[in-house]
Image (cartoon, rainbow, N blue to C red):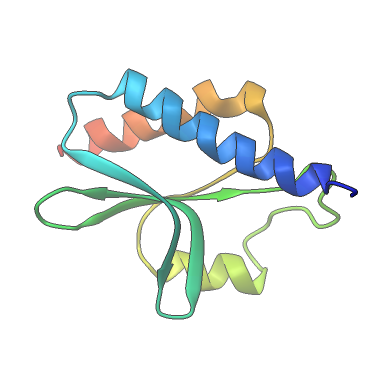
Length: 112
């Protein structure tokens, strides 16, 4: 059996993001969902406010060595941007702390 290491990396990265989020933001009224679908969009991770179910941000986990760079003109980016909340991309474990810092800024700027 041959394991797809690139796919496994994405899955492990999602798990680690979830774990680090729970540690750092244990007292915030939010929930982080993995592999959640809304309409025809499947999000790697999404963060929403408990109680109101308000979407806070979307997180797209990229695989190592993705051929295309992330930009604002891709179909997926345009479709996800239509949800009206911040969209973050991540592909490296070393960037998790930057992602959490970015979420914290969104959290403070929007007075959640």
